[in-house]
Length: 337
Image (cartoon, rainbow, N blue to C red; front, side, top):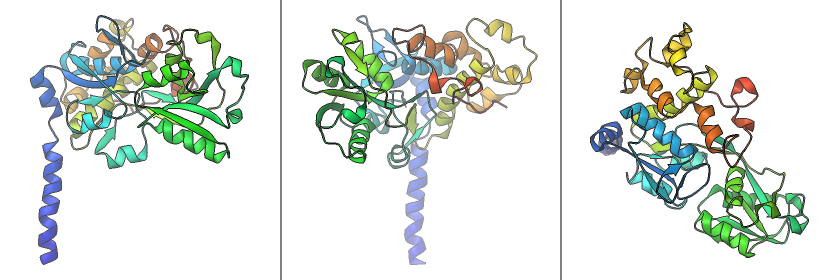
């Protein structure tokens, strides 16, 4: 019995720890805004202009959450975070959601007290070099210096790749992405490595972008997605279902242009998605028209992809794996029903 009496307080403290972390939706409503952690300046994902107006696919995702909760996509405050500080900010409740090109891994999902809510962008790590170096493959990078950001999976993948191919390298490590690209341009290293989407964005900062090329090898899987704290299932559900709804909306041809027409649809799946049938929004603690709010104010997944990183953006990254599952990609969402 002594052993059981010892375990009981421990079990109760764990249970209360989970309860103590609950109530994010109530906090958000009381505050009147969502606190969203983002990158300090990554084109296509999260970047402010000189007037402080934020754009990017990660930014739009947080606006979609605000639209679902408040029917107002402007009720969100963006907090720029370094890769090193992002998880601490979420753990300490400085932010409500982390939407910062963050790779979903087992250790991050299980040991930090956090939950990944899905994948906004399927990415992979690559390398950029100067065309003048006459390098055509990452397998030719032995005995080079490589600029990389600390506190990232990028740094770990870099070591794995070179070790597995019996190549030597010297890592030149910096705390921020901006420091990394500046060091590369100044010649402090021969190679720049990060997620390919970020390479496209960082290359735009170079004085002569066309003098640099991205090598063909992809050396990792980098599923990037939003993150919330453990212990608040309702908030976790809201964040992940905002993403799922945006993906499903694209699949069902529900967009900012078609929303009024689709509200008249006879398709059962569209009716459920848009809150015409069922009480699926109320089950989340939202209004039943929450998806309509998201689409009107922000758009579906394809729309936020195209305008921020895809065909209608400066980056013009092809959808690739981020195409819907029905169009040759792997983006897929559970149904609303």
